[in-house]
Length: 333
Image (cartoon, rainbow, N blue to C red; front, side, top):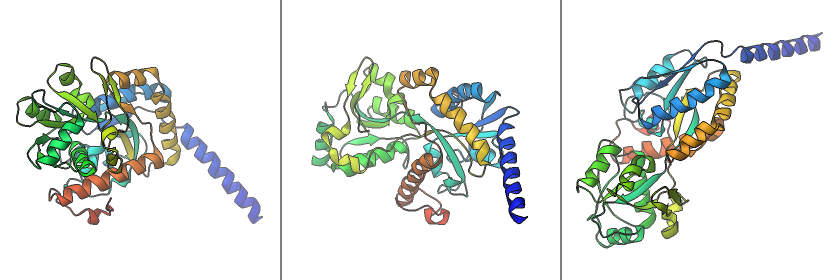
């Protein structure tokens, strides 16, 4: 009798689970982007949302909730909504610093992230410098430590971490000048305030084509073909030791709270995978110099755990963090 009851309970649970998944979604989904309209994260989320909704049978309405520290206002709003799969939170790798900067009181692992991709970082110089190759620049920075000014957005940003990785992997020593974002750091290079700038290829492409900046190397293992510029070599070609520290890549996409029912997450994962395979997403990525990822679940968790450790502890060591990463349970990289 007990065996029959047990089997009955298992069957009922299986049936209930199936209904739970088949019943989702029944209404429109909201995607809350934590960064401003028109930016990389916003554009990326609008592209993937438009494709996913075809497979979900409902609309995904994208809104923006900006402000706070490292996107904390949008993150808190998204996390405060019912954990039922009807709210997505559009974010990027930069959000992992919200905790140590005092805007978020949780470890980032409370999220399950769907990574669309990101544009790889590139190291460039102003055209009036004598550096024609990455080796020219690195050897000059090694010969006269601290003499070459370099911008890479703010302290602890992904671009700053990439600059630090170049230093650690090559032995170069730059004079880092922080700016409030990629655009200001690129403007500083064009104004002659700095000689070197590290931002993403998507952000630099127009300046490179216009001759405002000169590309030296990609900060990823692969070279990159750019229309009108030819092939930009990988920094690894000249300095294989960089493989110990790079790549540190953008990870843009959206997240849901980790405790959203797994059956509903499975529905979202299926729609996400199908959307990532569409021609529209692939052509958008190619035109805007994005490398597509498509990672979800354990794979994306591994990516964001590493990003959080790297970003958080770098900020702490730079004395730019308000909260000790230990208090949030963030391990050292």
